[in-house]
Length: 86
Image (cartoon, rainbow, N blue to C red; front, top):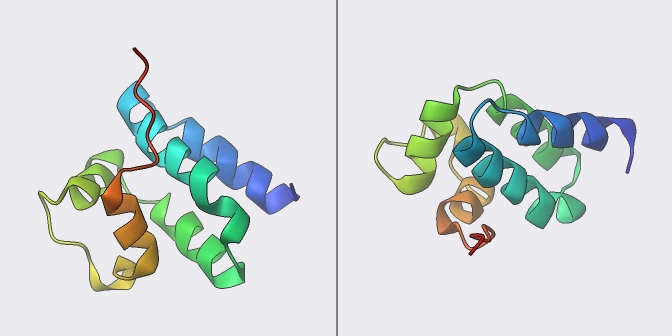
């Protein structure tokens, strides 16, 4: 994993709440291997947003800003990458 991906992984998994860590960090783990430079830049920009906004966009309680609409947000909204511990 290169330096940029390591930094993105850290930022994705250290959001401040367990719920945000699981959602955003889990998304990173599930999808980062397929990202090109554009996707990495988009994810980096997404990480500058508040957890409340990201989570609201992901669960559909707030409209997704145009700049984040597309395949990455569609994948985030599926939430099929989250494993719930039992």
